[in-house]
Amino acid sequence: MVELNEAQEKDIDELDNEYLSDNENPNVFKVRDALNPPSAMSYSAQELHRYIHEGFIDLNPVYQRDVVWPESKQIGLIDSIFRNFYIPPVIFAVTKDDQDETIRICVDGKQRLTSIQKFLDGLIPHRDIHTKKSFWFVVSDKQKTTRLEIPEPWKRRFLETRITCVEYHNLSPDVEREIFQRVQLGVSLTAAEKLQAISSPWADWIGDLELRHVNVESRGLGSVLEWDTSRGRDFQCIAQLVYCCDGLPEHMLPTAQKLEKWMKRVDNPPTTFMSQINDVLSEFWHIATTPGLNSPFTLVDKRVAPVEFVFIGVILFVLRKYSHEERANAILQMRMRIREQFRDVRNNGLVGKALWNYVDSITGPAGLKVLEMGSPSRAIMSAPASTGAKRKRKGSDDDEEYHPSPIKSLGSKTKTRSSAKK
Image (tube, rainbow, N blue to C red):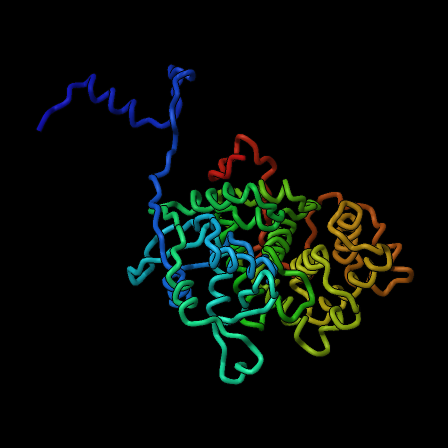
């Protein structure tokens, strides 16, 4: 064993330091935080199809987009594969599950893999570019008289087609999401999808709330409400709801820029607050599905606007000591009155201010009795803004209350995890 002298050990320590020291020359070229080189692999269409159905390819990490390709584009990809046109590589992050099975997380290429899966499952056809006839990979006995089937030699040829894949190993969740963001630069991501790609304790918790309360096998809020949950909008709505509740007593307006900075905070959500938000979403579902309580969603014959979803959550949060009936009525009055005042209910400054004024009015000295007063629409929606003083709510107990301490500045003093450099 070779022993190092003090000077040599100092040299190694300096080499191990990945950050720029005070005396480091900034003009010296240096590559920082490089990833391990990925592996270039190729799999047959049949292998990829089998891996998807067996669960060894994960097409739905939390940051991924929904299936957004229309059927025409999916059919176009199948045509490209048959005709040997170039298909961009699929990007996987390779990891192990709890049973030590290899799992390939699809970082880029979900739309392509979904198209291949749907074709081999008989859900979309191959369409002849000249005759416009559709030919199907799978044809049942009942369909043989109405559908043209692809000949067996061409089926085998498609199944054996090699699809190029790029595989990264040992990626952290942050880097995995950063790769997703970087490869999507040429594709227009919605603000909701960009938000969904953030990795932080708060983002992970909000993703869990989405799974528990929205996407619950046709039983969650995504099914019982008429609202837009496509392309990450349900995640965005829950994030905005949590952001507004966390910011109380201030009247926070969840703009995309503010929400993104807030989402990147590295502190863990307080346990009490997490429990209260969970109760809010459970109560939301209870009111929406219970006859006699669901008038906010039956008497107002309009789909729930995203900003309405957010402020329904805020109302349930600030009125959590009230009865189901009182909270349901407060939601109904909010939906009716905001639509009396605004033809277009959108998440903007005017609508947001009016909704905060409504929240102020029902938590003020008169409480919910304000809803019984005359000309409520003008009186409530135009109420003066809150002074910021924390109100005691009906039946409140200081020991049980979560008093959020919103981060005032998310600049240099607040540490955040790595995010995509654009």
